Structures are given as structure tokens and as C-alpha cells.
Image (cartoon, rainbow, N blue to C red; front, side, top):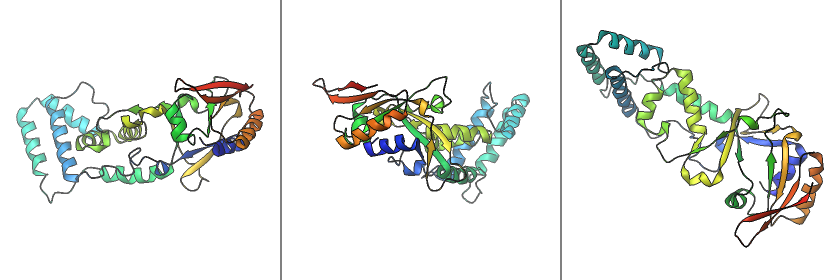
Length: 283
């Protein structure tokens, strides 16, 4: 973070958790579900997926919607190719242009529009040594890094942080086939899978961040798209000062460090090895 932000964090004993609407990457957590996908294409994918379930039922169908579970089990018991053919004929005929879309995609969309405003995400990096992070997020080496400790003796949310999965595979919610699977699941399980896929995956372009996240939701009294949440001061570890930090801000941060009993202070220097070298100056 910048040195100004570090001063606010240490002075107020709070961290800012933000809605994804404030994120700098518009491709991060999707703002809109199934954007650009045609309802008819999704419906066709659902039909193909259901027919595959009927013809080749998996051993475990517990994640499926109960109605679909019932159909899969009924067809499996009947063991009738003709029954499957009749079902396929009925499903294919429902693909006519004027046929209503029977999926509950709109339910998911409306739910997500509300969730994304109330969602609060804290983004963390697993290491203080990542040079690119110092440049992009710590004010081009003029900022600081605050370490948070995952210890058993302090009750903190840090221990439930989840690592980001970096992948260039199609996002679950970016294809009709992915939506076919989601819309065929039991709704609560589908929402959980949707949430995890949307919040904890990013493209490999961002892998340099080595990011972990904690996702939560706003408190009743919170306004806007962020929440400044307090943290336990005993969960703070070391403070790392950037090599180009302003001297006045550096002095302020050093003074504030006395509030945190587990904090040691390290000063960063740019070494000839093209790596940042840290030297302990206090603690």
C-alpha cells in the first residue's frame, strides 16, 4: 500500500474491504452474469447436458437439482432408449424461437447484482518480497507493506483466506456449457460454486500478485461500496518500508509502530542483484 494508506491503517487500526465494483480489473469478479450469452444458447446447452445425464448417468448425482435427480433415477430404472428418445424430442421442440426460457438464469442474475454491491473482499499478497507488487501497489517503491500474522492465540480472519487460482481456462460463468451445469444443480450449491469461481479465480496475467482473498459482506450500517473493518493489533507482524519512501511519512510510520507489540521494522533497499534487500532498523 502507499505510505499514506499505511499511516491510516496503523493509526485507525482498520483495513478497507471493498466491493468488486471498485476493483481496478473489470475482468476480475464479473459485474454481470452470462454477459453476452444468448438465452437460447444456454437453453440448448442445458438440453444437451441433461440428455448426457440421462444416457450416461454419473455415479454421484447429489449436487443436481432434486427434480433432475428424480428424472435421472427414473430413466436409469426404466432402462428404455425409447423413453430417452421421447424426452429428447420434447426437449428439442422447446428450442423454437418463441418458446419461453424455462431456466432460472434471471434468478441468479438478480441475486448476483445485489450480492456484488454488498460483497466485501480483502486482497492480500503472500509475500513482502514481490518487486512487481512494490511497483504497482506500493506507490512505485514509495509505500510500505504491513504483515499480518496467522497465529493460534489471536482470533483473526486471516486464517480463512483463500489463494487465488490463476487460469486461462474458460470461466465457469463465461460459457453456455458452464451455465448448463450451474442451472442444473441444487440452487444453494450452485450459488456457492458460482461465488467461488467468480471470486477466487483470475487470469494468469495477474499471477505476479500471489494473491489471497477473504470474502465477506457489508455490515448493516455500512454505506457505499467499501467497509473499514477493525483488526486485532496483536495480529500485526512486521512493517516493511519502501526504498523511496518519503522521510516524513517514514517517521510517522515508525512512531505508529510502537502501538503494535509484535512489529519489527525493516527498510528496503534496491540491491545490485535486482532484488529488494531488507534490513531491520527497529524491533
